[in-house]
Image (cartoon, rainbow, N blue to C red):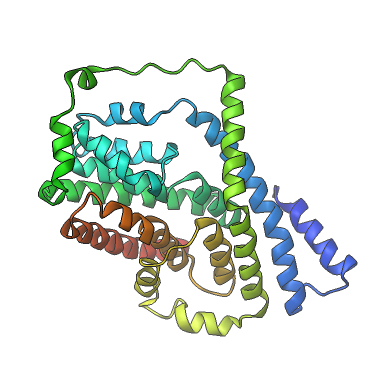
Length: 330
């Protein structure tokens, strides 16, 4: 079977065994092979995929996305919002202006949440790293479960009619929206393919510049775990025999903030040591979708009651997904 990453594995093996004279089975040799194999592989994937996604995203603009979702009702609106969230570049730092803009444009509260859940959790960096570390099957499951969670959580929030727990100034902005803004239409910007490729390369370079250090540090930590942490220790704490491993991992991940690029290589090492993949990916989802900075940002437009409902729904949903992951990937 063709392995596109074989050259990285071969080169890492040659450096460890021939150049350094170490055994791959030794603690130091295993750690160095892990590091030398994963760093070029993950960075290469990150450059290529982010370039492709960045080129495609040149067709999208925040105003255009808002226009697509304007007036959409539940359940179809939740589905569209979650899917659009995958292919748009907006992250948790954009949460407040996007939240206000969507509600101001008449996008229902639940539909808005479906978008805000999907966009940061199923982004290109997470997809690239999961694909590079765990393969296409796991990546597709991650995307499917992530989108499904965004649809379900947004739909439930819509059914609960929680608009009263949105800060009043948001609705005042909606009322003051002019008729001209309501009826405006957006035309696709007329960029040449060369300009789109330039934009894709710019986005790729920006992403790599912002996360490469986290990738290297995360892989270094993962390499240390891979080479030196006993397998029995990992399986004893969060192995398949511990029925509470998934909720423990998710609860630990909710208040934690870590860059996804730094977390994923560590999760690979934990999986190699015997921690179930579903448990690890549930932890990753919790860190990505419920990061502390995002909650602080959303607190500006959401009252504590709505924020608590959002966190509770997401935590429960991710725990369920963790168990489903484990069942499907056993």
